[in-house]
Length: 535
Image (cartoon, rainbow, N blue to C red; front, top):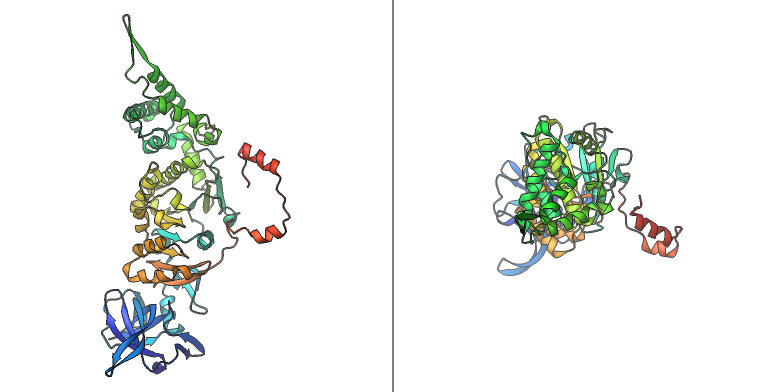
């Protein structure tokens, strides 16, 4: 049997790749072993390289044919490029390698039985996400602690199956009694996937009062940094907010800071800034402009635009959360404590696009700060899911940076305080590199854009960079999983979620041929006017 599995020898070795020269006797790349046909050199398949009392496991990343000098004449030979992924010693599998093979070391084809020990190394956790693509009846097991406890990036082009993958993975843990998952859902896709087991909050209908914003978020919302009077606006706004917070919360005035989440009256602040903007000072018979005359005009225009727009009523016209003591109730809602929900879906689909960045920053920061001050944080870990992250966590600096700064802080410090991130995006090149570089686990689905492919190659460890060459050819719902939570890089067909998220493609052709639902334009226009979105 050993002779049947022999395929060649090591030709060269470097720190990233092993080059293998296939045996010249191999005339076909198909081989029968124990009733199953294996393809020698298939991308994503594995080989075994015995080295001393160890067996190194390598993953095939390239197959090519080259002219090789042998016995004084040139011959065409098959050459494999292999990345070493793990080591088997005394029947136990470990990630990574401690020694490298030498030239002319024999190389053997790995069959299912050889890899069972490696694939099953995390089986004890009982967390399987799908089927290993190239191996029949072999489940892909992950170390769930390392997967959810360290940041995750789920990347893939539109239509690759990202939403179903996220829903499938989260459904597997949503049945546990103390699960805490919060999804920031831009398109309201996930409510259906967790129906009956989730706390669904439509942020456009659920009050998220302005007094929860920290000063960075207030600045981004109301102050145009390009305004020549921006520094004056910042200074006065900061002073007035602190004064109002202390006035409305006198029992806490000695400890209140500009960022303390306590109630203050925004209309009161507006009135004072209006007064300063139009102030005239009379000295004897002389009338002169006040120190801030005309300096807050643009600020007041921006503020009034938000206060008078019904789309922003959920922030600037609170009816329920109008005192600091209501903060407890609001946190109960967001964390799903009232309904004992395992998953909270924060539906941002009805939020005006120009404040999505601020809302994401506010929600993420509140959740992080909660566990920062929580003495029982180790018993209350929270997973934050950022859907369509490229929309509000940009790779380039711009005018809207609050969300990016907040999530970058969580990416750097969150694990120490029991807050982990799952970043989901179809354009990884447009997402903050600081955030993605802090991820320890990557679920990479089909990516067709060359810029995104190259970006992902830079993100994953150098040893596994060559595996990303398969990204354009992945099937829908298939992913390359790389990171600390898997024993080795695995190509996995992810289990289909049940129920699935509301993200499936519309069947244009079928609907064009025959449609039971007829659109009434008058009804659509009425909904449009009333901002009454479809549930």
